[in-house]
Length: 122
Image (cartoon, helix red, strand yellow):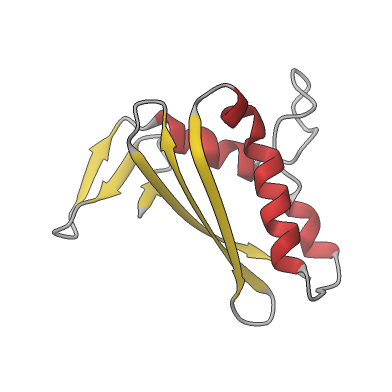
């Protein structure tokens, strides 16, 4: 599991449950793409994700599929550029208004990445 520090330094949890600083810019890029509203960056209207739209939508039976689609769409440029390899996205409803998404991939250096985030829906 990886954690992002507000000062833009990444931390990873070691097997001994210690936090260790790492320079993993790929995780930071993933987080930035998912946390930014799609279309809000003037230099690249396709940068960002549509996850923020799920707060105002009704929860349907396919909400997990919608979350996976939005995440894959947001990270597609990183996959196309070769920054992310073998991207796997899983989503599961947790509680009434939350969906847990788990992303697994490899960066360009073939280091495994795992990222977990909760998305608010409806």
